[in-house]
Length: 55
Image (cartoon, rainbow, N blue to C red; front, top):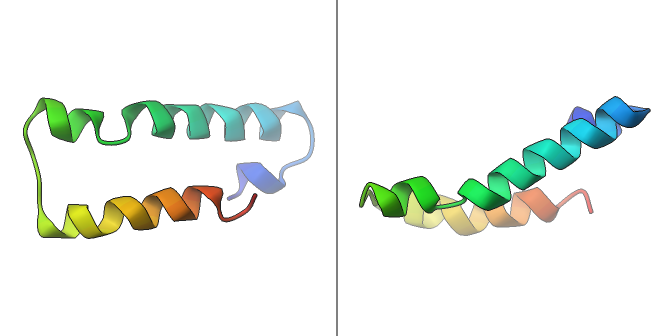
């Protein structure tokens, strides 16, 4: 959230970097390591919605 409200190219670059990293790694590590939990199943859709909330 902090990078979203920063002025200048640092805010834009930081926000883009964080969003891209989150989009690429979303669930990748859990699937690769065969990890799952009830909390993770609940939190995944919530986290997806929170990523798009400021837009």
